[in-house]
Image (cartoon, rainbow, N blue to C red; front, side, top):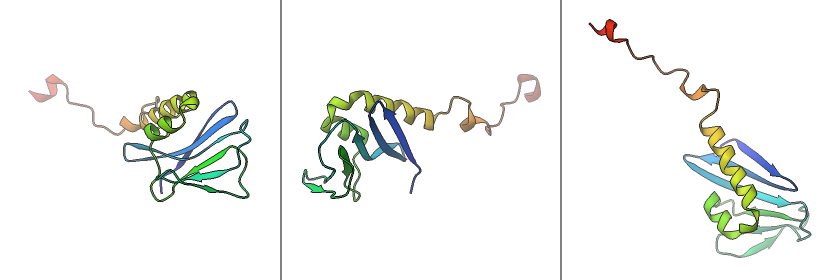
Length: 113
């Protein structure tokens, strides 16, 4: 399983992972939302999570939704989804260049002659 990442904007947080080139959302929680916790299935059904924290929405573990789908389902949390996307790019392309450090340096023109 991929490493889980957590992104927080104010009282809202999302847990997500990178699978290939996809961002899969595992759950999100809005700490200011009193709605009882539930799991949202891909077919739209909801299943209560009796001991879950209020404001928690967990997703169908059999087929986790990607960022685009969750953004469509929960558009009012667009700031959170924008932050997840930004952090995804930080994971994929770290600013300190760690992903390219082991690439060979191309030969100089005078070395080819």
